[in-house]
Image 1: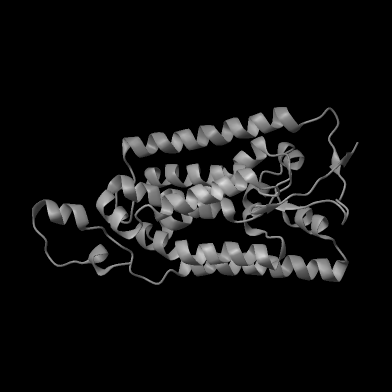
Image 2 (image 1 turned 90 degrees about the vertical axis):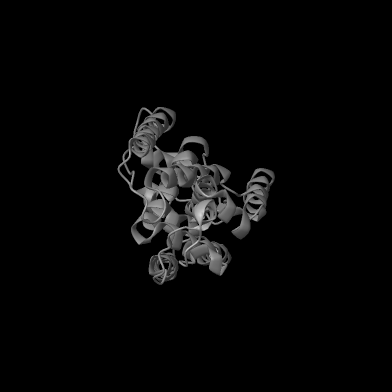
Length: 272
């Protein structure tokens, strides 16, 4: 990022208003913590699979992947835990790399606490839309990472000059390419990506950039809309996935396909 982005020398008039933005200059340690949690979850899940001879399907269900039928019956925590699980070292690597690239940028723009809110809420909205519209079991940090990109669109809304100079059209190209790839490829939970992107933009509007005030009427309204979205989404899923007798999902066999949040699917069945 260029020096002009956080320059504190005095600038006059409209120029000063157009090109100044507050940044959190501390090390992006929240990003590093999130990276560590993703890696740690992968290592623990892999180790458990090795020790107890669990296949990938068993590992995902045991450690909290998004399983629609279980969420519909009250395991709402899976909307959160799914965003810290990954299938295979390649999936973990690409999501970790994306977090390493975008995390420090968003963390400096929003500050530590607000960055964590953006990441968590984006991941939750990604899981929610996946829960509502994708039948597959899924996991991965992609929804939260798309949320980071969505939050950067708020910077464009607040200061188009800085956004254009730092990101230009590249961010739109990256978002568009990844969504297009998700729609044209199998094994990708694109609803999770869309949910994260929308959630990131909305929550950025609800909290503002670093040192921007939080308690404003418009921002409270956005929080209310996000809350209503989750209430509606949970109820929608209950109506869609609940059955007369509470099912107990059977564990997918090794021959069944797997999807994650760049997303390897798991086909599943349940016993009544």
